[in-house]
Image (tube, rainbow, N blue to C red; front, side, top):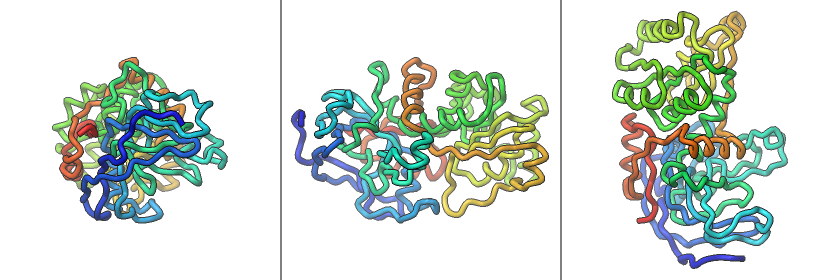
Length: 368
């Protein structure tokens, strides 16, 4: 096994009381790579809403509660510092900069894997959930599943692409929208939404409508929103929803959008989403609400068959999606709006996330 000097212990952020917003920095043993594995010195890790969901046990879709002592995080970028046996044919070498994604590894043999649906692997390993994640200075990863990072792409900008970027790239690809079509992004100023606007507008040629709170209008417009609708201008009752639907329809010439990609964990966004669509439009489910999600309000057979609507689920993306997303980022088509914070600020970041006060993505600097 080729290697460079690696410390015996390193700093990691662990969830010390899962079910609550609580974590602490600990020193833990630095692992050695096994067969087919590489060891990364991680310098940057994005903070995703999914990390919050895992930490607080807020997702009813996860089969088990998060274990105490779990190292969270799933958007990590760093350099390879050690190679395990059996990696000789991987093309990887010491010093290569690569990323770790939400999906840490897959079996490669089940039906979803064979169909390119990595996140739906029946034996999937998820970074930061029963697999040590990227909120630490050193982490193991399968050599066949890390994503090479282009030389021109800074690590802090690349890190959120490992989940946020690849997730919305995949979702937009599944939306059925064509260049020139209108696409609505609820949650347009968040970590997923601001990337979706850029990829949709600049990379795929869509006309984008952003929906979020007013303080996120400038970011949404900077990222490609041709139209922005401020949620604070609409009440939460049926009248407010109907007015929002009317405004989306008006912005699209009265027809509705070709696609709605839900980039927020809001039940309300799902309840409204189908109403934004035109004939044969597509609702793409991406954001995962906490607790028990409410049914999509208008998801009844009469509405769906009359307008021939589609509802599509999109779980992250596969290895090819990740490579394509990073290629877009390297070309300047999409750029993460990042706020850099030290490891010690993670809880503060989650508290701001709870209140919907984050714009773009927070990235942890793990060097300290």
